[in-house]
Length: 142
Image 1 (cartoon, rainbow, N blue to C red):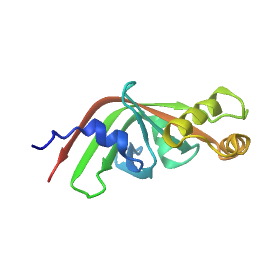
Image 2: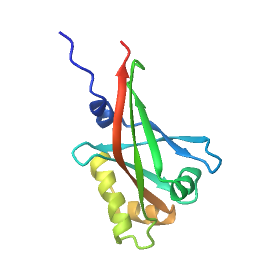
Image 3: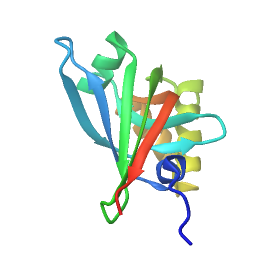
Image 4: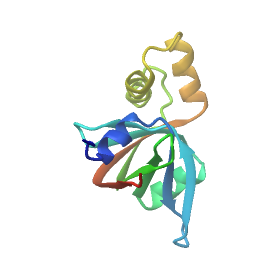
């Protein structure tokens, strides 16, 4: 007996995906990212950088989609919704950086040097993208 395909599970298990935002002219802009899906909250998190295309696009138009693919390539899942951008922070101990710490802990566990991590988040002008998921869909081909 085979189990039913659940795109939410694929989203939760995937650590690489493609984020799609909209350019000013309406064409898609795609970027590989490292997502973390909080299934209970219905939010996908991604660390992005202020000033890069995806961040600029999301500040103008918060509609966003993220697609992941199974390791064997025979299943995919897409989540789409609205972006909330948190940061960038200027204080290593401020709420914007604290949100990035929470993302890291959920996605990867404990960091070996939190002070260094916090300093890098400020220096890199990191922003936490919280994708509030409206819809999840996908397919298992085989």
